[in-house]
Image (cartoon, rainbow, N blue to C red; front, side, top):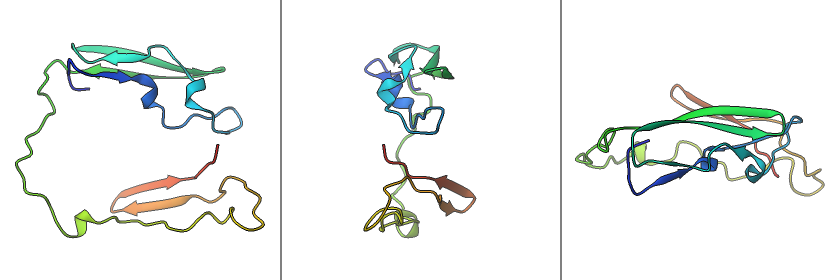
Length: 126
């Protein structure tokens, strides 16, 4: 994280998705965090532990010592053309939803590709 005396990082913002032992999505507010926030006003390293029931995960948040480290100058003109358009559009609903649907989570993944980048997702409703 960039050194910034005017910002503190709320550690629960690092939670993208949490599931229980059956794979059911749980509310991120039910996940316990060892530290509520990370102050970014001085160089430091913080080991954060996330806990839900018996499950736990760890991450390290490092605050850089130099407030200018990693900060670039926006001196390039904006790019136009193909790079400014979305490479994937998904406008339809899940096949599991609609008339006669069982209202179950999707069972087939969506695969998004762009060059060597590949993202595979399942959409869940909680």
